[in-house]
Every structure is written in C-alpha cells, then in structure tokens.
Image 1 (cartoon, chains in turn orange, yellow):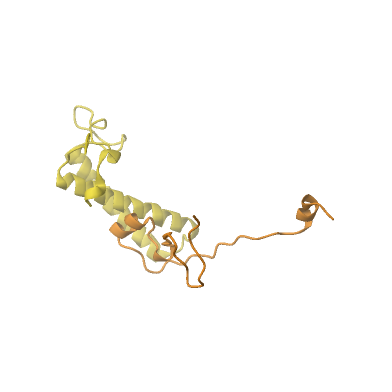
Image 2 (spheres, each protein chain N blue to C red):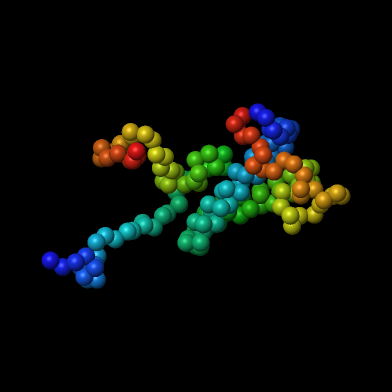
Length: 61
Length: 92
C-alpha cells in the first residue's frame, strides 16, 4: 500500500472554492454593524441545534 | 456598572453613528477591492466616506480627537476619556 505522502503528490483530496459575490441588497448602517456584515447573503449566524434546509447541523458543539 | 464612563446621549449617538458608518466603509472597501467596476458599490462607498468625514469633523470639534492625526484644541485632547471601548453599548 502506498503511503499518504506518495498519494498526495499526484492526487487532490479536496478543492476549496469561493463563488464570485455580486452585490444585491445591503443592510442599513445600524443593521450592518449589528450583524457583522453589510451583505445579507453573507449573514450566517450560528444557532445552537439549528439545521439548514438540507437537515444538516450548522453548529458543532 | 463600576467604572462606566458617563457621556451624554448626544455624544454616544454620534460615536455610535461613526462606528456604523466606519463599518460600512470597511465593507464597501473590501468589496470594491475585488469589484472595482461596480458603480453602485462605489456610490455607496463614496456616500459613506463623505458622511464619515462630516461625522468625524463634528465629533472631534465637539468632543476632542478620536484619531491622533486630527487638529486639537488646547490642551491636547486625544488622551481624554472616554476611549471608544470604554463605552457601554448595552443600552442600545
């Protein structure tokens, strides 16, 4: 069996990506500071025991 | 709260507004770094920048320097309380 170093040289385990953001609506100034972002699409609060639309947990205890 | 700095409601509101506008500037500037041709974002940034300049002028004329490159009355006002982190914003 090949060791991991040998495998890693030729194979990509995972790739990260960042989709290009296009500005749409923005929060007003007060809300932006309170939420920590000006952009509603980047507002992703972590709520205990909360699941996303696919039923996956978005919070790791 | 012990050690809490007392400041007038007017000063507090002005400081809070400066923090809000300043945060919008951070956000628009970061966005514009990768979207330099977004005219709407640039307008948003320029509006906030002009608002920020006005608010800073108003605050520093009334309450002393927030940033040490400003023009100070006598005596040097930059070291005066309160520092922004001395403010208790729990009432907002």
